[in-house]
Length: 71
Image 1: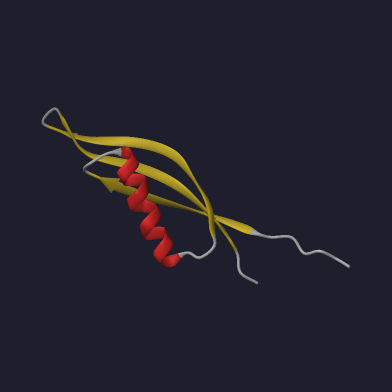
Image 2: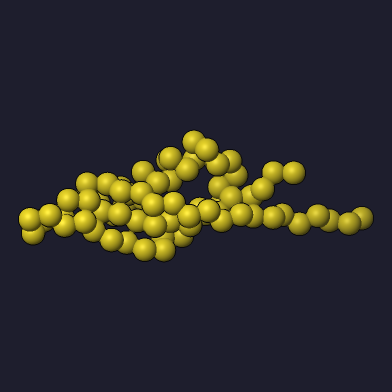
C-alpha cells in the first residue's frame, strides 16, 4: 500500500492595525481564512510600524500563511 504525502503552499500577506502587532496578525489571519482553506500555520516574517508626528499610527506585519493543497 502506497501512502501519498501532503503538499503545502505558502503565501505571503501584509496586514495592518492601529491597535497592536497582535491585532495586525489577527486581521491578516481572519482575512486569509476567508479565502484559503486548510491553513496549518502562520509565520510572522516582519513587523513594522508607521509613524506620523512622532506617534505610531499603524502596526504592520508580513505573514507567511501555510496551507495544505486539496487533492
